Each structure stands twice: as C-alpha cells, then as structure tokens.
Length: 436
Image (cartoon, rainbow, N blue to C red; front, side, top):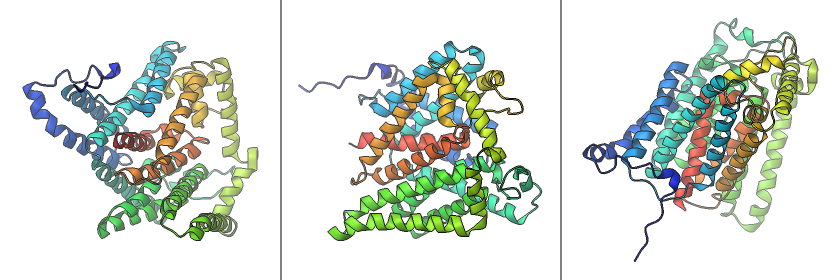
C-alpha cells in the first residue's frame, strides 16, 4: 500500500474551494490568467505609474490566493528558499509589533506582503507551467527595450532636464545622465541590472532568429543606456552580473572542450575582460572621470552624502539591533530625522544591508543573507545540468549578484521597478527545485 505524502501544515488551508463546480471551471483558466497578468506587470514595470503598478501587484496577490484555494494543496516540501522567506516574514511581523510607531511599520509590512504575493504567483505558475518562463522574460525584455529607447532619445533632445542630475559639487560636474521614463538615472540603472544577464540567456536559449535578434537588441540598447546613466553603483552591478554570467557559461560549456582548452580558456577570457575594462577606464574620459569620483571620498558631494547617511543608519542599528524599527520607508522617514546630521536628509539608508538591519535588526539581515546563500547554491547546482530551467538559473545567479553589488551602495532595489525583477529571479531559482 502506497502512503499519501503528508501535506505541510502551513499549506493545509489550500484547496478549501477544491471540488466545487466553480472551482472545476476556473482551474484550467488560472495558469493563463496568471501568465497574462504577470507578463503585463513585467512589461509595464518602467512605464506605468505607481498607482497602476499597485493595482497589478494587488491583483497578483488576489489571483494567487484564488488559485491556492481552488487547487488541491501540494504535498511537496516548502524548500529552503521559501523557508528563509518565511523566517524573514516572521521577523518583519515581530519588528512591526515592537516598532516605535507600529501603524507606520504596518504600511511597510503590507508592501512586503504584496511583493511576496507576486513572488508566490510567479512560483506557482513556474511550478505548474514552466514554459511560461520564456513568455515572462519576453514581457520583461520588451519593457526594457522601450525604456532604453526612451532614455537614449533624451541624449538628442533638450538637455536642460538632464542637467538637473549634474551635481556642481561633484568631480563629475557637467555629466549628462539619462533617466528615461523612471525619472532617476540610478533607478534606471537598478532596473537594467537584472535584465541584462537574462537577455543574454534569452539569446542563447531562444531558437527563432527573430527572437534572438529581439534579445540581442534588448541587451545592446540596455547596456548602452546603462553606460549613459553614469550610475557608479549601476556600473558595479552590471560588471558583476555580466562577469558572473560569463564565468558560469564558460564553466558550463568548457565540458565540451578538449582538456588543454578546458584548463586554460576560462582564465584567458577572464584576463582579457579585465584588461579591456582597465583600458576603457583609462582611455574613455567620461568613464574615467566618473570612476575617479568613487575614490574622491568626502571630496565628492555624493560620496559625502552617503557616508553621513550610513553613519546615521549605523547609530539606528546600534540602538535597536534585534528587531529594528519596523519595515518600510514610512517608518524610516519618521525615525531617521532623530539621527540625521544637519542638512543630510534621506529617504533610506542608501545601502540594502544597512536598510535591512535598520528595519528588521541583525536577525533580519542574517535571514536575507541565508536566502542569498541558498539561492546561489541552487543556481550553482545547475551549471552542468540540462533541465528546462538550468540555463535560466545561471542568468538568475548573475542577476542576483548584480543586484547585491548595487545594493551595497544604494537602496534602489526597494522600488517596485527593480524589486519585481528580483522576485522573478528568485521564483526562477525556486521553481528549479521542482525539477529535481
């Protein structure tokens, strides 16, 4: 007699509507509805206003809830990835309850839950119908392509708007930075970071010449747009993402090479790329000036601003190290003025690790670190495998590393235009587990 696998107790609420007439008619439509909604969300990330994105995000959460209630509960284990997410959610709940202003922290908690709803719907869709991954990526690339074209056109129009991002107190004064439809060059850079490695994965994965041309065009225009944002954190994230993807692909395809090439090709390619980056940094004046501003320390106004905000954030962590002040920018805007230095107002900690520690304490930061390590382990396990999502997992690792690199010096990740792409990356890695 074959025993029925036990259903995890956290999932036993699922399937309450299963078996009814309405549920039977609705079930076949749910993957199509979810796929269409998620494609629309990924396409409109840089183009819709915050109200429109909020409606789409809320619709994803509602549809996931309906899907879970209408379908039988899964007997599959939650997995390490979901486990870390639940740990962080539990810490965020505690941080909200013990926050100095719980009502303000509750707003941040609601945002976190809504983003988790998007992740859950992506995960459910990729678990049930993994072929939707390519369609989701196509929607993401189309939105990126439109955004890159809008941004590059700004170089040929009125430059007075671009000039407002030129800091007269910076060593890079006079640099014209594009921002496209996102109204912020750093936000545009953060939005592009996870998409560029995924575009290269599409170029390798898709078989149609027209789809490959679409992927190549998206990558090239996105990379050029990234350069013209002149976002130093964005450049760091892009270089990290593309370098990691290149290394992973070298390792993946080196198994097909003869022994001498397998040994020497990866280090030779890495050396060539490093040399090309050094030559570009030395010979291309706009790049050289912008990179020099990183080493200017407090002499650069942007660096000086961030350093002062970071010092204030560290004081906030020291005062509430275990559960922080609660999640979200609303509570941050209420508490930060108590710690800020004169003339250095800020909307965030300008560093994702510091922001996480401020909001949910050191345990929250450790939970996200555990989530990152688990994600990397899942992705690395796919280097030499040929499952349906193995190659996308490599792109997901690269995107994750790029986002992490950018996150050390900025908190653009918390904007929906960037964060939704991050959840897509995590859903890709999480769905891989169902293939084993």
